[in-house]
Image (cartoon, rainbow, N blue to C red; front, side):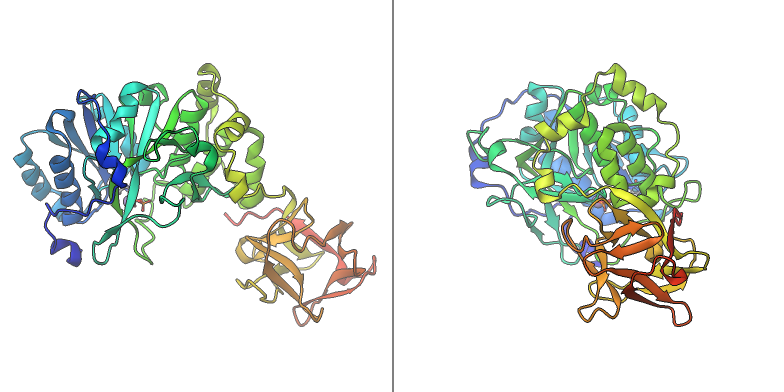
Length: 479
Ligand code: UDP
Ligand code: MN
């Protein structure tokens, strides 16, 4: 904030667009937009610079309004001071306040309801700066087809010194498609040849399987037809995937627009975001993910559960209205989506082997469990008192015969004396078999064994009856 406060709210920015972008001609009669900015305890100058940049760089005849949704902020500068400040814009900046913290997802839906002046809704985070000629290229594809949702290319504003640069990664032009890994972490993959070959010019909009979430434009009526965001999604996380899948599977298109650029201040290291309010559970993001995969992923949801077995015990709440919507709107299957749109995601994030069993691995009849102690990449696994909390004691046994924790596989050290975890892909360290209560390494004829008193794990010649070689997996979730 100290750095931000020293920089003009109306600063000029570097034009990061591809050279070609300067030569496109666009239709001047575009639908008007309501720009919606939701915020919770944002800093003063970063929020204000967002507004200044929108007003400065959006064609006046296209900007119907800016709708601000204050998500129960407690910082004093966001009170009267903000109300007074926005009067300078003579009513086109409208401020609404949530009575209680709703989180960014529901706040965006609330914003859609208030934003009645524009035909197109444009969402931006409260710490952005829109780029030169950002609006026209972004909204043009929506004017051509109202079931198209667009997202600008998001540039990186350094939160320490406020320099702006293009995001790393992507193809040779820096263009990436939005994607996910099977635990639903956001990923970017380079724009591929098949998508490129459908376009005459490299700066034309291109299809993306998913959006990052904070910055996009959508036809207001189309967004309402889709039911806005799932009302069951809470606070933060997964809503970008919900909307992306809903758009694609229900007859829409999601495009990234290279000639529309918006800078975003990314989280600095160590900032984990505002904690969820007390009236929601402790794991809103994971529950959101479960809702998304249960509604949209069909049989692919098993790949999510394979990556995050602990979410199986979470209660996603009532999904019936969403299933009904999906049926009535005749939305397509996730398989169709994977084959036609997101076909390149598994090339970068291979489908994980499905789990056969998961939970804590407990010495049968004892209170000792396998425990990684948080170690990885060669660290030794020990026996710890079973705590039923998952975490370092949560393992999964999968179809590729791996015994895994997170992205680590259980194996033996090179001298064969201790049991360790190593980072693995789906074809490494798959050397376990379960035989009754035994964990067997068939190639060596060894079994997972323990010395109860020293808490040490070992591998020893299998003895089917040896009590120290008996294990059971309990489905503890730790949540
Ligand atoms: N936000 C909100 N309510 C919340 C959390 C966030 O209104 O409970 C706002 C926040 O001020 C920002 C937007 O939602 O304008 C996106 O949040 P954030 O920037 O923290 O997400 P990130 O970009 O880091 O994923
Ligand atoms: Mn943000």
